[in-house]
Amino acid sequence: MKALGWSRWQAELDITPQTPARFTSTSLGVELTFAAGTLDSLDSDSWVDQAWVYNNVGRYEDSIVAAKKSLELAPDGQVFGWQFLGVSLIELGKVSEGLAALAHMPPDTPQRFSGEIFAYQKAGEQPAADRKMAQLRHVSGDAVDSVLASFYARQGKIEPALQALERAWAARDPWLIDLSIIDSLKPLRSEPRFKAIWNAIDFP
Image (tube, rainbow, N blue to C red; front, side, top):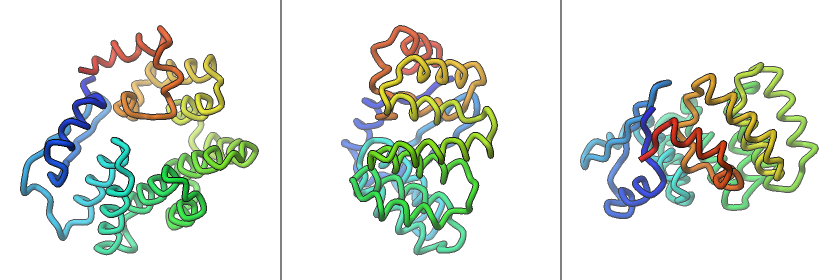
């Protein structure tokens, strides 16, 4: 699995901050290509791609702008526009606004649950986050280990977080392509078991 780490993503965006990004991801890896002129300004999915990139490198205001543009173009059909709008608002501490955006997503979707879990943990409402995690596990079964790793790491529960991360790696969870940039996993980065997974994924 190949992926681009934080430093290279940030460098690309800092060099050409207005250059659109296009992702192609599979269970085997992710390809990030920056090319001037590739963003179709009338394609809502292109704006979602950009919102994803900006969210992942911590440029939440830019992510919000791109997500809102995607929703202007496809107000009823752009689920991920609502997702990145909601998560970026939550990252900026606007938890109520973020939850309102996530509420536009279909119920019982893993992306909505994971956003809501993050919101409640951000707001210090752990019992509400626990309830949402239970709902997510009911809907998705065991296919939630990457979310679970973040869930535990935010609580400082290092051992269960590492165990969840190792299960996600054993299942080759495609969301591990974001391993290098998920802020909630920072408490794990000095752990040898985290580093083993990092090296196995072969981040540059």
